[in-house]
Image 1: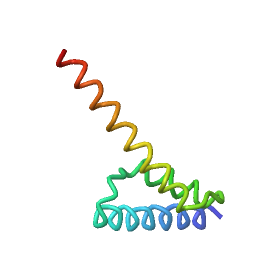
Image 2: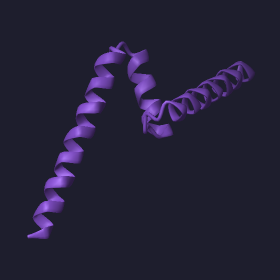
Image 3: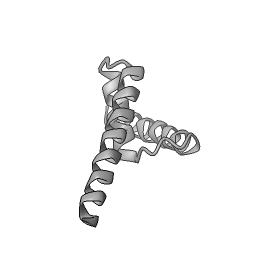
Image 4: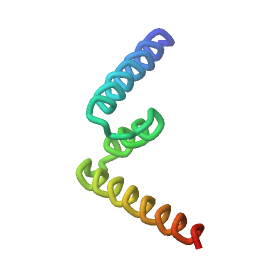
Length: 75
């Protein structure tokens, strides 16, 4: 039984490693932890397209906040 669990863990790590390589090739900007969270969310039934839209929106909002902060620092 323990060998089976170890094989599953190794398989999951290998799969995540492959997904991380693909993510880097596609320039998604997701680190390993963020990618793992996205995978778990999709496995739990979250719509991948909706998740991608949320991530893009969060990045836009973060960039806007940083720009506004930089502008206020200039004053």
